[in-house]
Image (tube, rainbow, N blue to C red; front, top):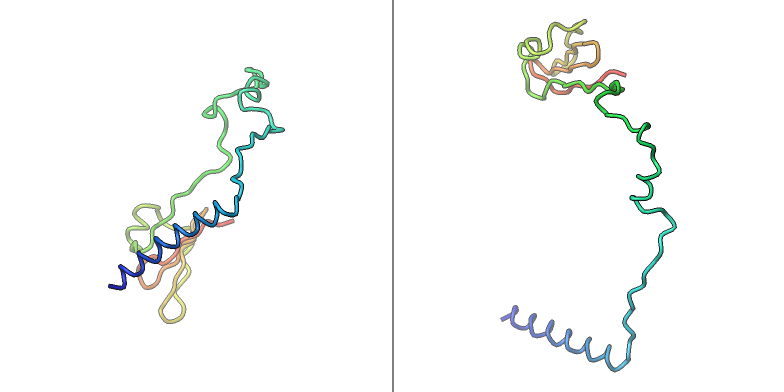
Length: 121
């Protein structure tokens, strides 16, 4: 019952909005073509000399992405996959949180499971 009333109200509102727009003669916006002050991509590509273009694979990598241990991994699985850490910081607090320091990242453990791993600066 409520749905029927709601639909009827919505339908009458749509009809009355159309009638009001026609009575008030509200102009509809016209499509306007805007000229861009920026050159088109084809023009930019043609301005680049072919001698300046290089293959990306021939360039040295500036950023080396390091895969980090995932949350929930055990200490054994981290050591198996990433090797022995440079330093092991003993656990402190409750629950016990320990850290393993690798060259490019640090791994935080709660008990024997990874809770976080971050890249070193």
